[in-house]
Amino acid sequence: MDEAEAHFDSGECNLAMHLLASGLEELRKEMSKSAWQRYVSEVRQHNALKTTLLCPFVSHAFSRPFGYPGDATLIDHIYGYVKPVLTGLPQSLYAYMTGASAPRSVRFRRHLLAHYVDKVLHERDIDANILSVGSGHLRELDVSRVISQVRPRRFLALDQDANSLAEVERCFMPFGVSTERRNIKDVIAGRLTYNNLDLVYAGGLYDYLPIKAARSLTLCLFSMLAPGGTLFVTNFLSDIPDAGFMEAAMDWWLIYREESEMLALLSGIAESNIALIQQYRDPDNNITFLEVRRR
Image (cartoon, rainbow, N blue to C red):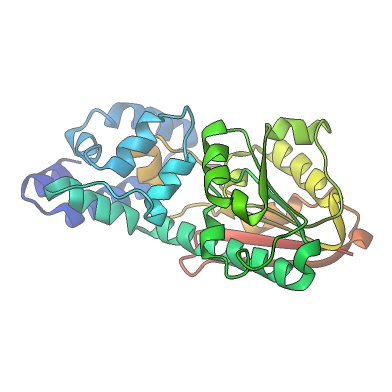
C-alpha cells in the first residue's frame, strides 16, 4: 500500500494500480474469507485506496448511488456511454480501470449476448419470443445487427430498477421492446411466468444470486422455453485478477462460480428435456457462459 501511494505521488498511476490489483488479489487468495473481510474494512483508510476514488468508475461503485453494486450506469462506464471530462491522475485512473481485465470481459459478454439475440431473430424472424432477465440498460441491442430489421413478437426486458427500464424504453421501444419492473423473487415464487420463449438470457444477474436462488431461477427460466428454445446465463469465474481490488477499493462483491457449479444449477431439470449443453469462457478467462437448449 505504501509503495503504491509513493507511485501515485510520483505520477506513476499504472504502476501503482498494478501493485494494488496484484497485491490485493494475492492477499485475498491467502486469507480466509472472514480474515479478508476484516482486512478490507481496515485497509480502506489507506491513502492509496482513497486515491483510487478520484476515478469516477471506482467512486460510482463505492458510493452505490442506486443502492446496489454493479448498476446499469456503472456498466455504461465500461461500454463508453458515460464519458467524464477528466485530466491528470483521475484521467489515468479511469483509463486503467475501464481497460482492465474484468471490464474487457464485460464488453465481450455484451457482444455475445447480441449474437444470441441476432441468432434467434434470424431463425424465428417476427415470431421470436425473447426475455432478458436483469436487463439493465439492454445495451447489447446497440450492437445487434438484426434488431433494427426484425420486430419480434415479444422482446421483454425484466428488471427491478425503474431507472434502468426507463432507459430501455427510451432507447429500444421503437424496436418492439417492452419492459416489466419485477423482482427475481417473483419469478422464483411463481408469481411471474412466461411461456413459449425462444431465448431467455441473463447477463450479469447470476453474479449476485446465492446458490439456492440461482438454482431455482434456472429451473423456472428453463420451464418457460418453447421446444428448441435456449437459456443462456453467465457468471464471473472464481479468482479473477480484479477481484481483490473490486472488493477492497470498490466494495463490489460478486458471487463467483466455476463451470462445475454452473452445471450444478441444472440439477433440477430432467436430462430428457435437455437437447444441448455448452460451456465456454471469454478470451480473458474471467466469465463462464452456459447455454442450455430445450428438447
